[in-house]
Image (cartoon, rainbow, N blue to C red; front, top):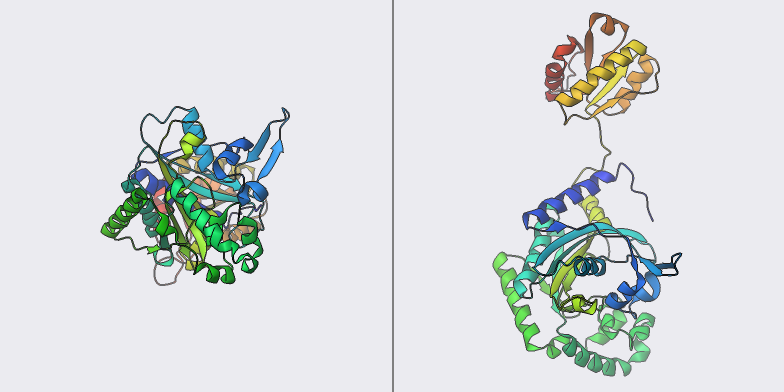
Length: 421
């Protein structure tokens, strides 16, 4: 569980602001959901034989001996909320963001406390909503400047009836080759065999070349919906690859599933994944309501932004540093600068605190990275003026403008001119 420090937060702010802009433009409203839910919610939605529920959840009993869990993902909590709040009478377009928790081995871009943005749509069963969800993510990649570094992979896993038939055929095939399977796949063979399709073990992947194909077991509705989705993505100019082995690790998915993957972070990694979950609302006690959505991992996206050099990874630098030597100078500076903040609300101003000599304060002003210093000393207070000292080269000639001393009433005008170079 990592601290996020000031030199990292500009990436987070850039990503969060981009997400907010894109989702607002598609008419999605923000939800703010609890970090803790009753454990049974995740067992019922994710599936008791999934890795998340079996090995990764942070679960504890509260003082009333109720089993609670730090949320390992966001969809179940969002579904619980829309049921409890009576929001399913009309279609809903929603999103949320925040920390999730899974006890798994930390690695690059993955921590035990990690952050996700989730996007969910309820009440529309047709593939045009699947397309909208995918188009939102594609537009976000363009906004972030990473669209050339991610690839969309699609698949259809069909209805629950189709998957049951396919599961039986897959298990029958794999049982004949059980000795060749890796340890994780052997464990999943009878509890969650579809997850074996997603194995990263090369020997298991080679074995799957001869396995029954999920596409051969799809129901007609799932086939038609998937074909329509592909048509819509083609019309919108969104490239994709159909990956017949793509499945999702959570039990609630059906029909369309997708992932956005990148190879710019070493081994191929997923930065965003989702799909359709038409049975989940009813499974959690609501009226039957179709749903589709996705979640994106913010840590991995930020690693990708850094890798591609999309935004500068520097801490916030002030525009102006205020130097005041002496009690009267400090009082005058404080009052004047507060008025300046009203006049120029977009200006970042750092006011020196803690006293010190003129020389020590100027050293801190220069070290701060500010572009200009405002200086008050005994002489400035007596004359009712302020000194404006550029701290960085201005203009295109590499020359630094000279220090100016101006009346307080002309400070705003002079400072704007200095900062404009």
